[in-house]
Length: 457
Ligand SMILES: C[S@@+](CC[C@H](N)C(=O)[O-])C[C@H]1O[C@@H](n2cnc3c(N)ncnc32)[C@H](O)[C@@H]1O
Image (cartoon, rainbow, N blue to C red; front, side, top):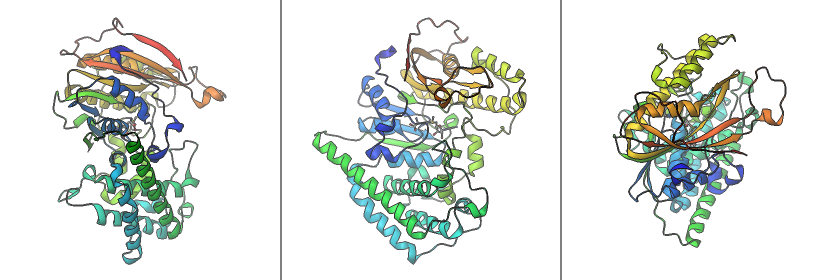
């Protein structure tokens, strides 16, 4: 692979999700081993700073911290900020979790909360159950959120302590577990109950029990991690990590300050990245500065039509331009309306974010992007090629690429197809180097780009 990096499979592997890792099973993450291999083989200086501008569940920041490297993780979804913070909890905190959970649960009876009619938990739970979940949440807030997190302009979720974040994750997982009957065929997706009577109605005992069980499990997994580190005799100092709640397109990262970027940008597959975390967002309801619907609109990959009109920009490159032109002309319903507009929104946000990421990178710094292609009807949305062209415009030169073939459900069970297109998807690992100059024209030639064999898995 170009630039001498060790590139393993970016596909998540269930077998690797055990122990502490098993508590962070969030959508669209790449495995820790994949990140660790890359960071180790990158031979970075001890003072290097790693950035993941779409940090999600925080695999990059977690792996960097395990290797003693400094890192910054950015995400716009507050749920992901909490998940990424919790993941960084030092094993030495394992002992504190259970007594804290016991105190929080003991306060349940002493200080019951009154729910407001607008509480978003009411969309999921019957009032009595929603009140118990909110009481646990409020007790975590009262017990653990200090002056760093609370300030006159509201609560800064990205300053939440690792312990508080871990207890929130235990509560998120409890709600997901209790909502198991609402799961769809996509395991990350929970359907909102259609009618009031369909709302979940677990007993107070069931909710408290599930929360306490999760905390116990997390504490045990963390203690096991500590023991493993002691047995391995690793003189281990975690690298400092900053997790920031921010839009990548406006993130406040100083120019030329980052040595290495490792990330997986939101895909253009009509995934609403907030919808997969709707229950968690309901738990965080009183702490959110933005309504989930507005948050969804700001996400890259939003399924809502943008409020402002967006025009196609030639600087997005020829592959993007011809894909958008074909999409607009497509005879299927809403192609030239809804679908064209949401795709424009996707590329506009991605291009703006890429500018910020490139500015943040030091000249000569490397950026690794894991990107998946997709199809609109039979039209190939070649996102790896599009990002390569966009990058070249901004001074990110492609130094290597490795493709992995992803099987989809339709590979296993082909069924009737309406449109001619290959099955599965290609997940590409793109390796860029920041050059001093941005290209004026997008290079069409792939000269200098080594295409490494495509692997099936
Ligand atoms: C493909 S996921 C990243 C997964 C991550 N590599 C992991 O291991 O969990 C993309 C992430 O981008 C975030 N995102 C979407 N739009 C964003 C924006 N405008 N600014 C910052 N983050 C955004 C989503 O919340 C999501 O967590």
